Image (tube, one colour):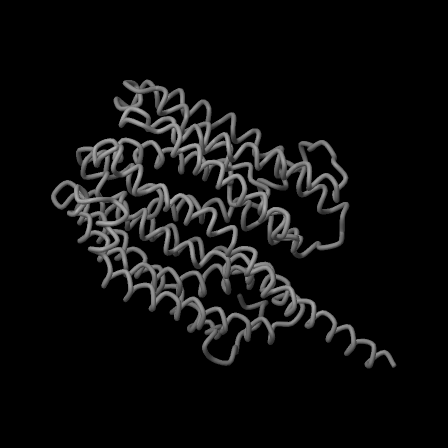
Length: 436
């Protein structure tokens, strides 16, 4: 009887995971469309209003904003999601996680404000345009406090998906109504910040309808920071070859070249955003299955490799072929030199799809955080070295090559490590969780 009951429980768990997976992927694609495609709708308008130089100035500020977001997010989008997924239905523990994360974010936000003050007096572009700097900081803090991680871990995506879509639509409308001249670049960031803060407030209201609110304690904040440290190291290292490249290029090249690279990167990142719903849906499930059913975890990991790799190959070929059309339609004739950069960055579609499948979707659920971070940190250092060498001479083209070479290094390194340890997701897993 006990064996029969165990089998029934196992079947119920399997049915629950499978029935909710497609549902959550669909909802997350709706969120992703709002998060990436709606801003992409703004691109043709903003590119023509701001021109390459104005676009480059805004991209430089957005790159700084991305660094601030990384500090405040601190990897909680992965570490806290994993913690909530593992503690699902343990409401007291989830309440403590939420309080600790929000308390930690408040402390980190104060650090970012101090960094902004330093930047205002040390970076000439920000000294000449403080409105641009502070609107970038405002937007960074707003987006950093998003509660999407909590609802992902709880597998309650419907309401937060609708909320995210509504705020992104409102931001898009605001951009079209209020941006008129190249000097309005700071208003774009301000509008984004207002929309994000409204989403944060509404998210908190929704969260505290199902979770008992408690004040963060020193211990819960410390536990959250310790829990998120390895993921913070991962995210900050990733930023060196993703969000931070416009900032790095701006240190070596004039704003118009930053604008050309950023325009191509904006298009490529919009396509890369198509991976996120799959990533966000698979990650909590693989985190759960790695603890409770390693064999089914490997089956799902293999499915992730096939799905992300297949989508990545399709997108790489498509973007390479359509690069001239995409640049002309989305950015305008003045951005024609960005076509070469976009064709180089198209390789990221395949490389990022595979690195996500090998790294985030398999190494992290297996607990290989240390090796994972070693590879990412090495990739970030390689990217910085390549940008310093290539950007002064080849500007936006050299920066694009630096990003692609870095991503190739990361993808190959992850696969070789998994294969060496017997955790190749494409083969029968030979290792054990203890050996990871």
